[in-house]
Amino acid sequence: MAEARSELPGSAALALLGPAPGAPCCPHGPALLFVKTSQGKEDGRRFYACSACRDRKDCNFFQWEDEKVSETRLAAREEYNRSHQPFFTHRQNVDRYKNFVLLPLSKRRFCQECQQLLLPAEWKKHSDHQFLCDITTAQLKSPSQLLYPLENKKTNAQYLFADRSCQFLLNLLIDLGFRRVLSVGTPRLHEMIQSKASQEEEFNVRSLLLDIDFRYSQFYTEDEFCHYNMFNHHFFGGEAACETCRKFLCEENGERVIMVTDPPFGGLVEALASSFKKLMAMWRETEKEEMPMFWIFPYFFESRILDFFPSFSMMDYQVDYDNHALYKHGKTGRRQSPVRIFTNLTPSMIVLPEEEGYRFCTVCQRYVSSGNQHCEICNSCTSKDGRRWKHCALCKKCVKPSWFHCNNCNCCTLQKHSCEKTDTGCFVCGKAGHKRSACPSLSRSRAKCIFHFILISMLLFLLYRPDKKKGQKIRKRIKMGICKRLAMKHAIFSKRKVKNKKKRT
Ligand code: SAH
Ligand code: ZN
Ligand code: ZN
Ligand code: ZN
Ligand code: ZN
Image (cartoon, rainbow, N blue to C red; front, side, top):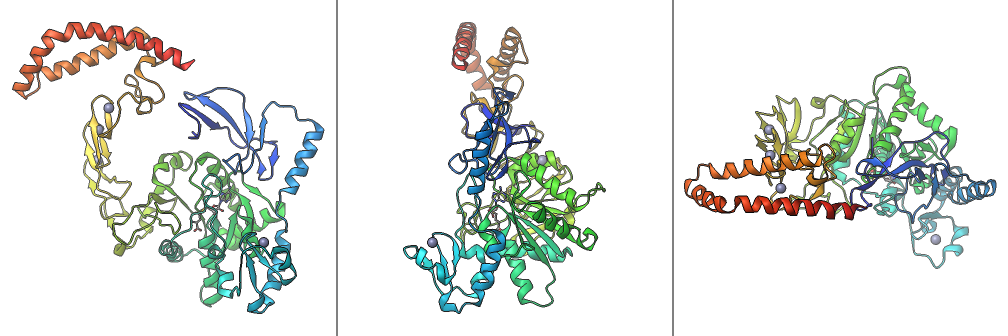
């Protein structure tokens, strides 16, 4: 299945062909195999590119699938990959931390430029860097606040949970009886669990953080954090780190463990799904049972996620973030976050807070946004964004309140749209990527016939619609012009076809 990447113009896109055995490596582990597509078909040579960085500036690894790479280039690449690993190993960072916490407050410094805890002997080297002083134990326990969020949209996209959402998630996990949380790309949830565990005696939930952000290795031991790439299921710490994760999942016979993940939203759902399936397989290889999971992702990816995890359902809960202007509750005029929880747990078990405007729908057997009305025709609570949606009899489904049914496009869409836009779908077959004049499912003459049939049906509709006065006027006008205009249309239509053809080559 193809994953469209939006950077490419027109209908061209990149398709992911999945993690390939024997793929070459960049500093971020095995590269992924891609191919350029045009109008949904493979178009060109397959190539490998970095799995983690969608911005070439962050990692410019590139290799054609069929390219012969010389021994010298391979050696140079290996050297490059080695030199692009973090300066300190995880072990070294753990030792440094042990020394750091022994220091008196006045000697605890954090270099903001290097994003690194400093030991006194290193101060000199960072003397012209900005640093924070008097790092408290509380600060060490919330590294997500100490480290600056990596907001590079294309690579890290670190959007931290608002306290309220994080608290909600944790309470939900506890109420559901989970004891271990595999936190994949959720450093703030991990941190909340860790700090509660160290403060409250009766708190017995543990967490293992898997994240590509190696800065966290300064604050957590090898049993608490694994440097991991969730796009290619790569453990940077090798077999030992992988084993740590497996052990964590399989403790207590694998009971009471849940995986929570909040990946960057940039796409590559297929790569994520493939990694998550591998993590699930580490939990129980023999049984078909699925490890409980919360996948936090925007609602417009619902169908993509269900493609890979048909047992999942989307919860109405809106996940809020601290450092994302769009995905945050405002004090006044609440902004709606598009981010939801997808889970394979029974929806009725996911209790959403009434005080935040959720209610239980007894028919759907799940909690929904208070604005999400149960549609009698669809027989479900159909809103995806929390607003009340309306049912369209022609589309036979509920649609956004701001949409209306466009007879040209034969579907509901925004009032302001251009019917000619290619991505609204073909007039003849309804598929995206081409206009009716280039519809491959019909011969040209048949397409023309169908187009004229529709045109004439529309005219007949206008002629005999109930509004008599208007109808008469139109009838008159049409009688005079219909033949002429149809002749004109023919001419324009054929000319356009030629133009389109030229453009595409
Ligand atoms: N809301 C979460 C953070 C989500 S942001 C919280 O508050 O805990 C996405 C997270 O995924 C970041 O922590 C980022 O470092 C991590 N991430 C980004 N790319 C990754 C990759 N390829 N592999 C693993 N983790 C990645
Ligand atoms: Zn520094
Ligand atoms: Zn409906
Ligand atoms: Zn409609
Ligand atoms: Zn239209």
